[in-house]
Length: 191
Ligand code: IMP
Ligand code: MG
Image (cartoon, rainbow, N blue to C red; front, side, top):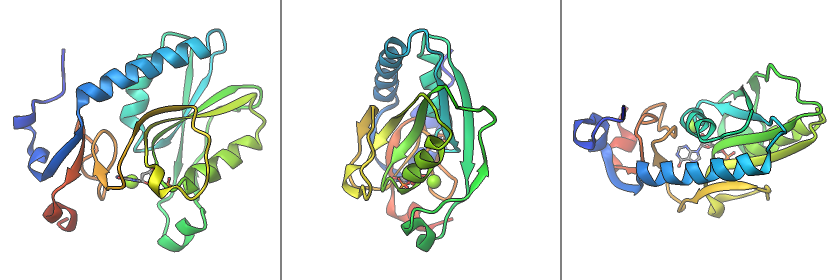
């Protein structure tokens, strides 16, 4: 059963000026990423680590496209002020429940933008001695990158534009849109 509401019954669609990536394109890309990861990690039971909340939809769909034994865990970080963000500082509000020493870890992200948050979290996880630590992101914004981060699995490059949908929010809204779209200007400034 397809639970995704049709476009014209979705009240959020009125706030979108352009659809950049359709839900069908997202599904297809995730299926092929899942196949690639399943082949690379056969018999290794990797631990998938995600940062709440944006990764929610990607993690759920990616894991269902994976055909090997896996585990999953989540972290949460506080939203940062613009000053601390520039220094790449984030506060861990929820840590992993799983020890990662000796594990193969796949760090799953919704979008890598400046790379500052991810860099901080990867350094933190590296100190815990995983056997391997790779990054898998659905969306990548190369134009904004401030720190070079090796990305092993990448879904799509995005233009240098603010987008919403498929987990990505504007002030906590629009995460549940099944596609990636650009917000109408008046929706950006309304609450
Ligand atoms: P950075 O890589 O440290 O700059 O942080 C990436 C985070 O910024 C993501 O996890 C998102 O929460 C947020 N972000 C970056 N670009 C967008 C966007 O276009 N829409 C919504 N959130 C975004
Ligand atoms: Mg956000």
